[in-house]
Length: 250
Ligand SMILES: [Zn+2]
Image (cartoon, rainbow, N blue to C red; front, side):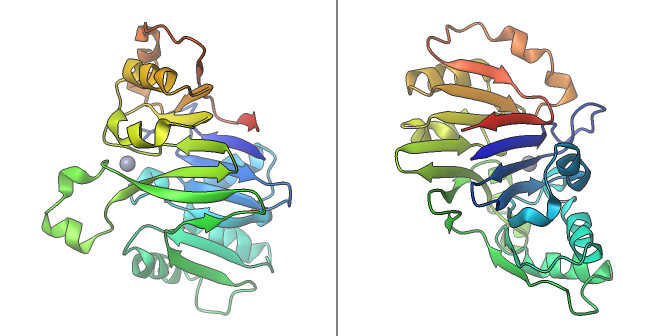
């Protein structure tokens, strides 16, 4: 399995970092896309992946930097006369919205050349070896109890990928590093957003949990220099900051 981080930026547009998008390529050739931020199709092609090999798309939540590349990706599949089915696993209560977006973009008026299956986020079997499990994060909890939270898509999710003893924790947008605590144990690789966390605390808790590798992503322009302030002893933990196009072999 090979992970590529195509977009390592956050909500603020940046000249050198794209919006959130990561692919997971399996031995079967199937590709999972987690989040589809603005410009994800172009970034995926730039990094050498074939858009038509994407079989599953999973979205963590409805902030625009995590989904606005999806309509363009679907258009690429239609224009490219894709024939194989695609599964979109979308945040709670967002299916109607996405049907409307695709329809209003003139994509659903004629039968598609492929089957586009839309479901709500759920645990998935990705390959013979790997499974995916969404876990709730507190990223949108400031809206909890509001009228909007009852009507719009709520809450947000991070993802755990597991294969036997192997565990990858992909934070996506969280409320704070505390969202990860319960999942850290047994994690081999932590891919952690850096916009809503105390960076030193993340390094510390990953080290204490015995995580081997920590990669920071979702870097906003304002926080590019913040990594210099991480002064905690990282012990045996290998931590780094991702750039767009980073390949992580597993
Ligand atoms: Zn967000």
